[in-house]
Each structure stands twice: as C-alpha cells, then as structure tokens.
Image 1: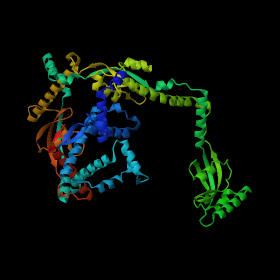
Image 2 (image 1 turned 135 degrees about the horizontal axis):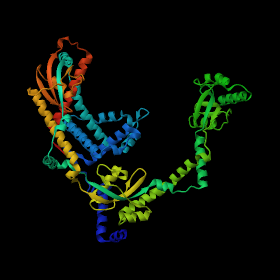
Image 3 (image 1 turned 90 degrees about the horizontal axis):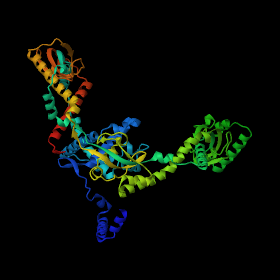
Image 4 (image 1 turned 120 degrees about the vertical axis):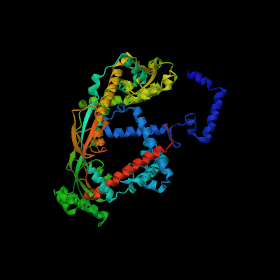
Length: 607
C-alpha cells in the first residue's frame, strides 16, 4: 500500500496538489490547511450567536476537572455519563449566551482596563501574592486557551455580572413589606390530610392480555434494546513490556549507587554560627577577629559563649548561634558548602557571604538511613525495567500507529508486533466493561470510520496502554419482544392504573361521596417542616377555612382540609436589620429569576 502511494506521488496530479499547498501556506499559513473541510459547525445558537462543538467539549472538560478536584483520588470518569455531561454543558452554554446577549442589548461593556484589573487579581495567575505573566500564560496553555481568548471570555463574564448586579443591588425592602412578609411567615394553619397510596392499590388492578399488548404497542420506544457492538483489538501494554526487561548486576549496582547519592542529598545538619558583620568594621578586621575566635575555640572555649559575646546575628546569638536542623541548600552557597564539608562537631575556617564573615560549627549530622542493596533490590529492579521499557513502548507505539494506517487487517498488526488479537464483550455507546469501560474506546468504536467503513482505527492511548481496533459485531437499536419485557410492561401499566384509581378515590373524598378514616391533623407555618407531604402543606396555605382540595404526592394523592388560620398582625412585628436584609435578598433572587425566565422567553434558541 505504501509503495503504491509512493508511486502515485510522482504523477502530475500530486505535483499540482503540492503546488496548491505551497501557495496556501504562503498566503494563509498552516492553519488554513488544517481547517480546510473541517470548519467548526454550530451545535446550537442564541439570537444568531453560535455555540460550537468546541465550546461544548471545552465545557465538558471543565466539568470533569471540577469533578476531579471535588472527588480527588476517588474520581472515576466512567461513573459519569458522557451524554449527561454533554447535555449539562450545552444547557450551561445556552444560559450563558442568553445572559450575554441580553447584557449586550442593555448596552453594557467591559473596558480593557477593567479586564486587566480583574486578571491581575485572579489567584491562579499569581506567585507569592503578585501577578506573574509566565504563570498566567502557563495556566492558559494548560486549559487550551490563548490570552486573547481568555480576555474575550472574561469580558463577557464582566458584562453578564454587571447585568446580574443591576437586579441584585437595586432590590429594595421597605419596613412595611418586611413586616408584612414576616407576619405571613409566622402565620400558622391547622389542617387535616389523608393520603391515598397508589402502590397499595396495585394488587386490585386486573389486566387482560389485550391491555398488555396494547400498552406494549403504544410505548414501543420505551422497550428499545440500545445499539450494541463488540470490537476486535490489538493492545500494546506497558506492563508487559516492563515485565519482559532483564536487569544485570552492573545495572543494579549503578542504580543502587544513584540511590545512595540521592539519600546523601537528603542529609541534614544542625548548625551554629558566629556572624561578624562588615557594616561597622572592615572585611580585614572581620577576618582577623574570626581567625582569633577560631583559635580560642580550638583552645577549648565554648562556641555558644563566644557566639553570645561576639555574633552580630541578633536572632541566634542568645541561643549560642544555633540555626537548627536544615537540609542542603538552605543557606547561601558558600555557607552551605562549608557546612556540609564539616564532620560532626567540627568548626569551619572563616566563611565570607553577603552578610559578613561566619564561623560555622556542625553541631549534629543527621544522615538519611540508607537501605541495603538486598532491601532495595526489588524496588530498583522495577525502576530499571520501567526506564528500559519506556523508549521501547514509545517505539512500538509509533509502529502501532504506522501499522494501523497501512496494514490490511488486525492480524497483520498483531503479527508485526508479536501481540495477539483480542475481542471485547458486547457494549453500548454509554456503557462497557473491561477495555470498553473507557469512554475514548467506545467513541472510537462507534465512529463512522470503524463502524461504517470497517477500517482499522487510529491509536487510542490509555493510561498504561494503547490499542487499535476493528468492529467485530454491531446491532442497531431494536425493540425487545413482548415476552422479554412483559414484566416491565405489566409493572408500568399496573402503576398507571393504580394511580388512576388513587386519583378517583381522592376526587370522591373531596366531593364527599367517599370517606377516609385515616386523617392526620397538623399545625404549622408555611416554611416549617411537618409530617404532611410538602405538596399538601403548600396547598393548605392556599385554602380558605373549611375548604377541601386534593394534590398529587410522592406516593399518589393527598386530600387536604383547612380547619383554621392563626394570623399574625404585621404591626406587631419588629423591623430589624437582619429582617430587612433577608427580605431584600429574597426579592433580589426573585427579580433575578424573573429576569432569566423573561430573557429565555424572548431569545431565539436553535438547538
């Protein structure tokens, strides 16, 4: 195949194509070739503003990143349905686009200065509490954004936040409305309710075969078996390459020596010093005094006593010059080098640094407890195998990619690499086991090139392996036969009929043609939790005393009768700052929700 391509590349047509590419490169650059025939089509639009597939993919990845931060080591991408994340991302982008369009129509704008001021205050772009341009660029690069893209996105956020702030900050709460609202919140109502549980009525439902058949036919889409496929694949696994590597004794000894070197770097020293500054004395005077003090130390005088008397380091001299325990690299280079050349208890010659002249004592040497070669053998062998396998894996990965493009069959790929062709169990677009539990594998399996064109796939890279695949079997989504889903059909129909019976009984109780012996009495405020279903409690606060009504509840239906109302006089309610602020916050939330609902209703959304 490759030879045929090389032969054809010498023809006139190939030369014309090459000439065309050169012209396009010269005029528009490499991006023009990449983008030919692959323009990003809009997945949805709001008032003509497009939401592209790229936008959705980026938002899904942001959602996954947030989930990783939230769940940490327990995060498993396979637990989150890809389609759900995609739909959530699309809905989020539509809401953002609606907010942006409406903010722009209000004439709101974000000045370059406000964008700049916001950027420099974002903690992710700061080092040591200050904005760092390199950090800014690195963070954007990791997230697949350019500075211009980020500035444009930030400007959009600023103007949409301005629109929200207009509603939140302009909301008012007068003393009268605060009192009235609190009086309503404190109002108590006494009501009775009875529940008609639909599940308890299911046993009374009798179904004929004709009814079951009709229900199945009327809702066939509900009983679809999802589209399924299985793949044949060749998998290049890093762990197998690692296991196949051999380790010689020379390699092991070299690795052990490197281990000892690493442990030596971890050595710590407890140091004391006498600092002789050169601000009030000359360098020569400081050196002369240091030599004199070293001689006195050699004669047996106490290092701590001389430090207290002569050291200019006010932070340590009262402690005898003690600097505590530190690792290599903690001090200035000259100081550090001198300290780590000393034996325990030894005192250095005078050492010059930017701070002055030092005498250094190595009070204690704390060495890392290095393990023996026998103890480290297994760990070091694993490390050596990993290192030796890495270039082999990269080489075979490249070969796998080449073979996937040129080979006629998976067997050819497997034979060329000394691997075996494996086959997966059946899986769907949303779920699989083993190798197909990976989202990328499933997406590749259902891609047009693999599924429809029956081609060998491109390489799919996983955490510790890579694979290419071909479709082994495929079954379109089909309606399951009635015998297979009879239990589901009967269960759904029985629940539906039982719910109808519950509704009829509730209506009869409201009408007075049927009674219930299971009434419960509740006295509560609107917001206070109670033993009543929430729907029943809410309905009680919409009734007049003596009136009865029914509402749907979690288990079926509830009938509610209001007995009495214990109202609070608004004039008796004290107005506090907390009460007013709570009312204002409630009003601002209501205003914001109302605005969002209106904005969506007047927006032209194509999805």
